[in-house]
Image 1 (cartoon, one colour):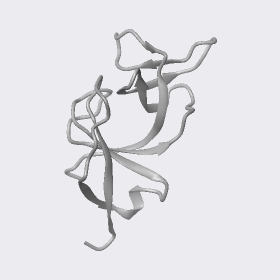
Image 2 (cartoon, one colour):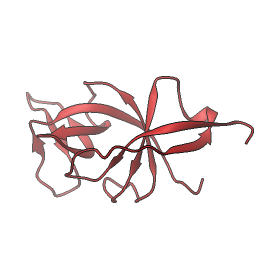
Image 3 (cartoon, rainbow, N blue to C red):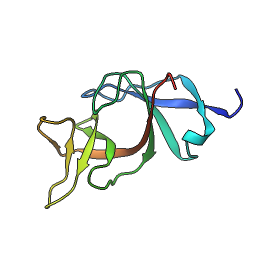
Length: 117
């Protein structure tokens, strides 16, 4: 397809589980992804992301407060909002859920794409 690029899926995200390896690829519009970004498939719904969506992410180990991140807590991955104020560094997974302390940022999610777009 013209204007599309086929890229490998870097992994599948199931909240609270280790990142799943994927051998699949996906075709997306070239304008949606930068050279150094990776694509992850979201398996379960969280942080306003529906199952089956693709998270386009930049590998980074730091994030600003409020950025949507892919983070690890003791080997399990989560998507949530990063909070880094008043001496705290926490991952907020969803409204009303206790923040995860000790999270390590793996990537910052720049864009979420529905497979139907």
